[in-house]
Amino acid sequence: MTSLSDLVSALPPGYRVRSATADDLGDIHRLVAACERELFGLSRTDLGRIAADFARPGLVPESDTRLIHDRTGQLAARAWVNRRCEVHVHPEQRGRGLGGSLLAWAETRARQTGATRIVQTVPDSHTDAVALLRSRAYEPMVTEWLLEFRMTEEPAVPEPPAGITVRPFRAGDEHDTHQLVQDAFDEWQQRRMGYEEWARHTVERPTFAPSTSTLAFADGQLVGAVISLNLPDTDEGYVEQVAVRRDHRNRGIARLLLLSAFRAHHQRGRRTCTLGTHSDTGALNLYLRAGMTVRYSSTVFRKDL
Ligand SMILES: CC(C)(COP(=O)(O)OP(=O)(O)OC[C@H]1O[C@@H](n2cnc3c(N)ncnc32)[C@H](O)[C@@H]1OP(=O)(O)O)[C@@H](O)C(=O)NCCC(=O)NCCS
Image 1 (cartoon, protein in one colour):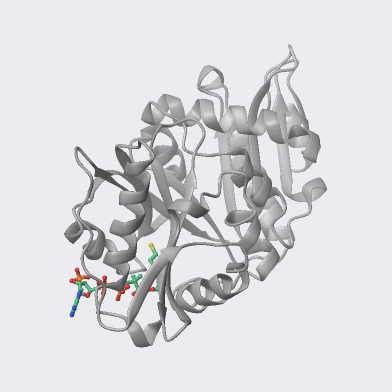
Image 2: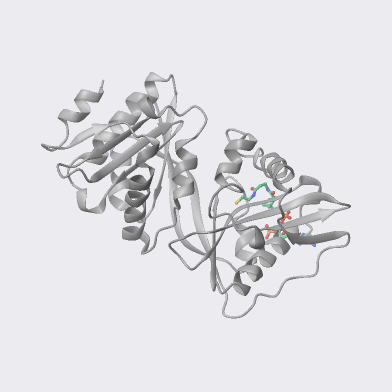
């Protein structure tokens, strides 16, 4: 079994391991951003997402996170595990066994909690990470795609279906939107998010963009929502969540909300919008038909413990 001290002994001389605290979130964000810039040329993760993951219900930083610092005190790698797992090794620190050590730690920690499997998402272009996971008996489970919508001119927005009105998100819409999104995501998500957790990922996130988030109403009732973010390191708009109430599906409401959000981003000077989806949602076709294209794909790997 890999204990904390085994993990230390597996590291290069002078490297140190400890758990993360809230004071480390800025350093973790810079590490994740460096990994993303290396892979994609730009960073997609904002500090709010790192903070929301750190505050995940059930995640105990002391036992469920690890940071590795190099001999100069720079953050070289980090991992957390809580049903899902993320491991990041700084591009300049690759090839030193840090990723393998953290992966072994994460599996051990997951077993300690009684978890029967561990899940990790890796971009397909990150071939080293894919090879590492495969060599350790991880198997592909789900495909994720990052899609983009390029706007050379202001996108045309279709007329709403009869009885549907669309407007931007306003203060006071938070709880209805949480309910709508979580009811829709319950069709495929493993675990429903309570309001506080959902809000940390969306409406309370510093990058939340209410004016480019669009809501659809029928008879005064919320029936559809698109939640947008302004990610700081890019000049692209980002759509974080799309949901339509089941009894209003297949009327073009998601497409209408998306194109309304894209137009609002365009009006604010953005020329590209991105959005992530995965193979369990069945929504890929909707996005492709709306004119989006796949920028890159990732695989969610699973290992039964
Ligand atoms: C995915 C989701 C948002 C789609 O919402 P929707 O309002 O039904 O989407 P639309 O009506 O705009 O498009 C859905 C389909 O209806 C078709 N459609 C659009 N207008 C239509 C109309 N007037 N009549 C009939 N069909 C229509 C679209 O072509 C589309 O078909 P396609 O997927 O084969 O391209 C909804 O199913 C949902 O909330 N799912 C659960 C949450 C989820 O998975 N969200 C996406 C996360 S990435």
